[in-house]
Image 1 (cartoon, rainbow, N blue to C red):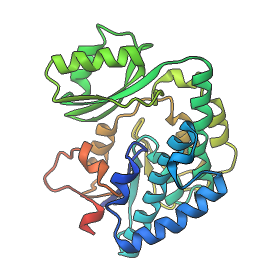
Image 2: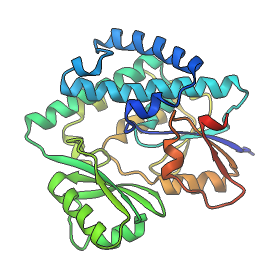
Image 3: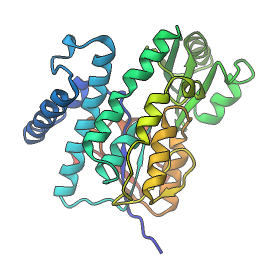
Image 4: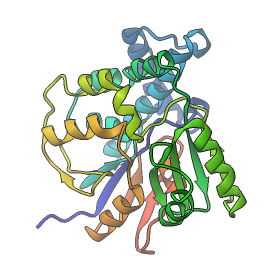
Length: 299
């Protein structure tokens, strides 16, 4: 029987670089800068973000999140904190795939770069998409409010984050109307991302073909530690499963709230947020008081 006590949680790519980097201690900042310089040079990106094209700047910011994850992950391991299992929120699946040994870091970096092709395809098609986060509504409450009023082609709940937080995704006009509605119905905050993209909405299947194909372009190793799917709560231990998880990520809604509940049911009590700024802890909630989410500042 498997005994799961410690889980590593990997964030997506939404955090701004300045919010990530300010939290890195000097020794970790040095490691990050070395990794950043090598990765940006290899991928043809400018470390001065303003010198990149708009799409390249966004990709560069997202790559910084991935690089920070690696630095924090390595720090935890060096401190003797080893996961029994892990889970990735949104593009956290890319980060966990690399850190848990299924793909090389260099390949994970290029997965992030492939978002550029998706954004270009959307721009060429004149698609106006967006995402938004809502504080004060859980998944079920959001479902009851939104879907008598909107079609699922217009928007979906991209992630049920917790009992108090959801992310919505879809056509920009519908997303913005939904955010206004949720504010009017008692949401504490309802914030559009302004990304021009709608991750975790099925509509992206039409525009992310290059991304999906690239994710499947190399064999994946079996991960060093099991990974819990944020889509359906399966425990993934095979490389092929991890590849499929990466391929479906951009166009499939996730249930982070249910993934955390499943980890608790499996016996996990110590959760480690692998983001540099404690982002996962901010939007996650655990049910049992015996469980705790630790961040970089705790280690």
